[in-house]
Image 1: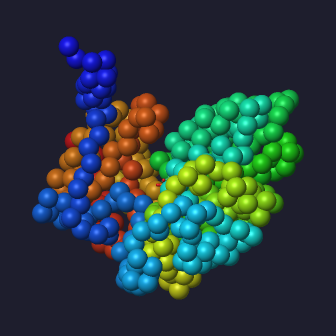
Image 2 (image 1 turned 45 degrees about the vertical axis):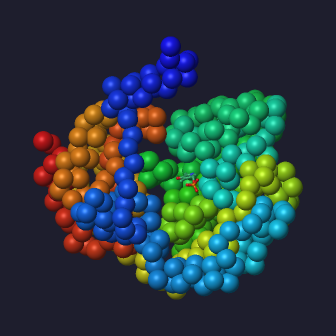
Length: 388
Ligand SMILES: *Cc1c(COP(=O)(O)O)cnc(C)c1O
């Protein structure tokens, strides 16, 4: 007789297949870049988060190799035991400087940074308010924090204000700076003004803004002119525009020292390899040395939007590197993604539960590593396959 676990697991897979929600991984045989190799064929890559083309940048690689030679591969322990080395420290200092904050603290992933920070800040009796479209790691952190969990309508500050009115307890408002599946940005000035009136703290997850937005690439807060007093908790990742892996939280000494003392996902986990920190430090330096990447990416985004508009494609309200095209049902989104794959384009169909039901989409991402010709080819193929 099949055990209850076998039955449950079998049913879960079957249900996903029937609803066009079954997911499969691609196995790449090349570095990240505008062209990637998959099953001995090259594809134009429009689905990675390597927005600046730094994941395989020679300086990032060189820094990684040099640090691996000097520090070895494994960090050997958690940060609080003996896993914290000079490259980790140097990266934290560079991230604090980039974001204009007193301190920054590394985490091994954005998921760990978000869930850990929320667990540390919140307790029973508190209130956490989250945008409906926040990243899963923020929602999970909020749900498991013990605080009363409230979602508000996407980017709707008036709805948030109504929900906050007359509510007791410590209040934390949490948003993505750039929404990962929509590409639009949070109204940070309005949110921070509301938080000030309500005596609430604001936390921003800038996974998709760091490196890309703002004069120096410091992200959404720089673009919005917000400092540490407006947004006490800033989290961002190192695995997207910065091309490496891991994440950080930046803020005042009081916040960072509490994360070091209390956050279980920080304390009870092995520090990432020092060479990763050295690679990320090289990427942070490239934000300054190769600022053309940010400017060029913005011209590609404008070029894509102009072309898509001319063809009547269903663009979303995004001016970031994330340029989704809304399809609707999951099956059609997958079929479209497969037709584009046959034409040599790698574009993922994003389906529930990552996005709300009925809003499946192609999530197209642009990178400073793309050429204008590659973006034009993308537009041409979208025009050809969209309505078939
Ligand atoms: C990718 C992402 C994360 C998770 O970061 P990882 O380092 O990949 O775990 C968190 N928040 C947002 C908005 C993201 O897009």
